[in-house]
Image (tube, rainbow over all chains, first blue to last red; front, side, top):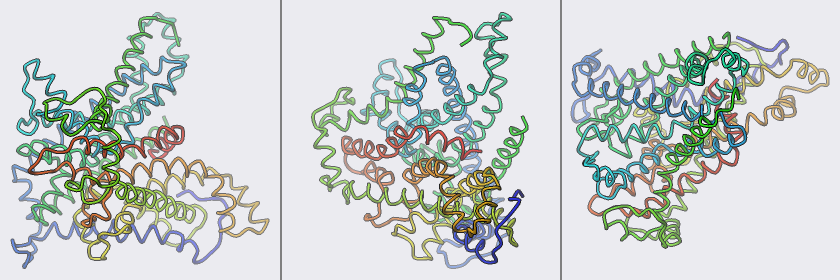
Length: 294
Length: 282
């Protein structure tokens, strides 16, 4: 690990300096994580009176549970759709801003502020717009013959949470794409133009390949975002329904733990989620190392 | 620009204008809804032009005039959100900058272990360990307190890494010069490191303030006493009325108030915001 050539010599000061952070990490991060691992091997009876050690029983039960498998599928559909939608829209907007000279700054300001809106609020806003009785969009959809009702129709509920989650994420992706586009040397595109490549040809064979590191990075970040940070969107808009159609993994951990009081199963789900976050973090860090040498 | 193609420029403007409109659309609808009387929503579809009830809606939610659907005025929730966001942002910055200082400028046994322990926090977002963390807070008697709202969220690997990165780029000569002049570690930290990392601190503060303000599930779990309710968490409770039609104008007025502070921060400090966003992802 890197350090300075010269350092301060002090026996107790460094420990004092790291102590606050380590104390919080131990008490609120490592201890609960350890508890989750331990509880995932236990089973509590219905009255919470007796706990028995059942080894991997909770995990086996989960993998046999159609509800859990459904939640896995729902999470995959939700994550991939949201990430794709947010990345594609952001790329289109970033390409357009990249053509602008004077107005780029104004457009950027007008496009980035949704980052600051809480996911829960984003959920409430879209829930209001899509409200089946008074919402504006169901009213318009009704005109063209589509009867929107996200509290009954599974597909409608999924579309709604995808839109609400993506709306907020576009601004983030947009900023990174703008930075990525600015890093592409103008000379490359000019050379291609001189060779006779039109704007679309240049996009496919120069801009897009050179943006691929940014795109990959955003894909990982967006998947992490949709898997964990969209909890409030789900809670505010659909509460996982209708009929489990939007019950993503992280929401199920919470429901099973706090509402269903099935602590063992909830803990096992927590551990599986931790494994997923850890692998995604590793992927992200590997990639960043590559970007440095790129 | 490589070549000036008129139709492409027009297309780009059209795409951007459409993007800006789609992005602003939900907030526009929310704002319009907040300016109407509750009766405007029974007719069947949301109004699209402003009404005349804006002053009443906002005054009512701020002072708690809608007692049937909320137990505390929004002004109190705004205060709670502000306390929570500031504690999280300042707390994260303070503990991270101190530990980064220790890790970069000292060599001590278990330094590597300390670094890895901080690194692990990156992999344990609160949503994942939510049930056991709640149990810890409740065992420590921290439910319904500002400490319970903020402290479990303030350990941050990203902030520590950011400061470590900043310190590593500060030339060694500065420290050697300071030592020759007789400055101890704390004086060096206060008079050289802090001023040099000022813009990084500001950029990080913008991002962390937004993070803290927008917390949702944690305040809902930790605060059963409405006195500590935060605004983002409180909206859900307003919207979840069982036996009556939700009071849309109040819900939307609250939503507008809830997003106003972080959005203003992003727009006013756009440069710092972008810097913070890009740096914390490194």
